[in-house]
Length: 274
Image (tube, rainbow, N blue to C red; front, top):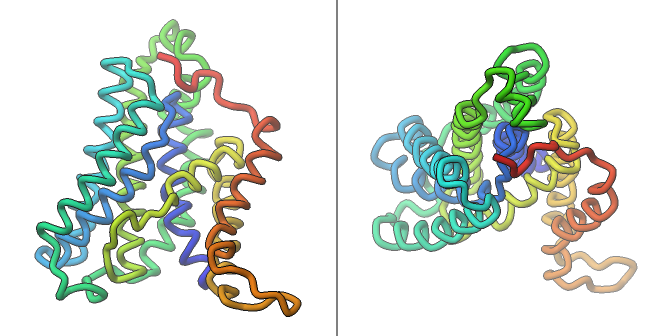
């Protein structure tokens, strides 16, 4: 169960990466979008309830996502630079907002939706996206734009419009992912995403930019995170393993997996192109 709990936000964020990257938009801003949603939910849920907090958090994450669309597609700024800027703004902005408006008395007692709500969305979404990408006109257009935006234009498809809706979906998925983090811990803390957005993107890459394989990669990362939580402080063969090494385990697995599989996956040809 711990593996599922730790995998759910990764899966949701990875699906957000799927809807943007398969359309050709490089999106390392998943981290900042999740963090923004988590902070906004922690601020809004005590006043508007768990459903209100979720909706407001989704709006906040979607606003960040559409900002990424505007900067990369309208003003044509480098996708990576835009993503890093969004992550930096989210890191500083959420810290400031929660210190100024957060209620310390509600720490550990924030109203939230039940866990099964987030888990259901996390495990159903990849299957729905698989069907969407292969069986619907909108999904085929998304794949076409991500593969070759120039050919897509010749066929009458507008990449900027397709990418708009892709980033809109990214905002929804990352918004739910951020709220799930707060629901699981019951509290918002500074930089609480702790690199999960990057791990979700790594899982998407390991899955070959496909929804269901990305789900499986997220489960693998969740499994190693669960091991890290359960074995922290445990001696292995009589040798004390430093806490820092256990904490680094999920990230080490991510680096090793990327080093071994990145070259074997086929990157969408239109990724980063206008």
